[in-house]
Image (cartoon, rainbow over all chains, first blue to last red; front, side):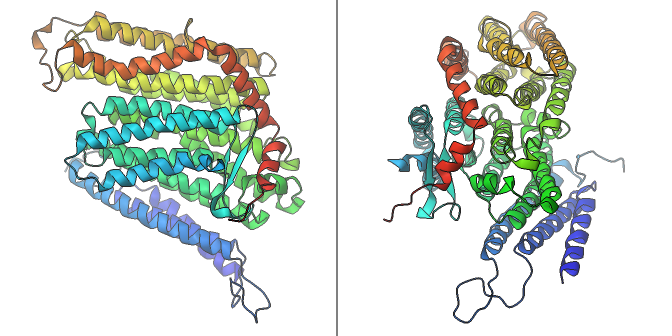
Length: 110
Length: 511
């Protein structure tokens, strides 16, 4: 399972970096989203992967999962959600004000 | 009385919410509330500074959760110093904004207070993840403040600023995640204890996390090569926002100083002085790039933005030398460069408003209204920011160069700092003569109707600028006691045991 999760995090990060280096705003927004997915998964993994362990005290549990990374991920998800919403609105505004969706706002000859 | 540590965070937050609830038409009330809250912050920061001055470190456990499990806020000399500088700059920027710029958008004051909320939180927190959260708060407020008033250029610069900072936030989370996964804590004091005896097989990972954190802080501080977002963002935003942003790069510098003296400081075993090999060369290169940008700028606001980069280069050169005297010199230089850059941004706006279509471009334009007054202000600020005697910039640079005498890289530091100072003076002399001496007859000058020609108006405009300059002069007049304080601050930073003990031995009283 560790291998699978690490490969997924790696692919998500690679996609995120590639897309956020693109010249148009939509791929950049997608890239940032991929990056935030990767980082959320990464944070969750940092509590070590385990299946079926409760994160809070329970009477018949032998092992516990670390609850802190879950709390961190929750915070990170909320923040990245808000940021994504903001950057989408900003890209739309940039598109409307500059007349194209290039990140550097240059007008291409038609 | 310990609860006072929490006030710099909760006060701007509550004021922000209150301002959000006030209806749009009560603009005067909003201005008064915002200004009163910011001025109250100065008072609170002064009290905190007074408490920290004798070396006490006040730790405050949020929600009464004992560290290292809960989040702590810590007020030591460095934090109190940063809080005071922030509150003073914010007051200057706000005094300028309430003359009318705050009318351009609906929520200027709300965002301004939330920005202060994020800044103060970032300075006070003693927890790495909480630092991330406060970074996000201050960034989100800064995105909106940057775009305040709207316009094509602002949107473009804003988009770059937002995207690069979002990537920075992801890197921050990767670093925080790695540190938590290997050390099992996020409390900075606890991290400092645990990092000293980390097993050898984990050292490479922690080094990676530490350097990733450095990349994030370098991005906030606009260190080479991560400075490219700054000139456009600072040059295109409104003057009070740019003035407030003068403190934003210092947040990055503060975090570098805090994290790499406390966590990766001299006691971190294998990871001691992690960034020592990187910080000084990068800071010196930033200084060179900054001054080249200053020389190449074709607009005053761009030039000031590059001066901000130069000042960050100087500041981090001081921190990069990593000795008690050099950090003390940097801490003296920090408020000076913040006040000077903030005042210069405000003055650039005053000048640009009076130059009609030429705005702040370096081309012979109409004769500026009240040119003598503005010319003198420009001259004083240029001397201040270039670090010429007799103002505080000179003392700051002198202290830095004095600290460099004991450093092996002395020839490099001397050569670069002195040459860049000379080039800064040349660049500013050129822009001053272009703006004031080479101005042509006033026949094309149509004064912006917003600006009345009365003496009263210019007095109100210049008041915050003069206030900020007076603060710099204050740094000069009380230089002796301030140098004493910053040396004590540097000493406290170089001996993190006291900080660690104050946080980890914190007694949590039951309520």
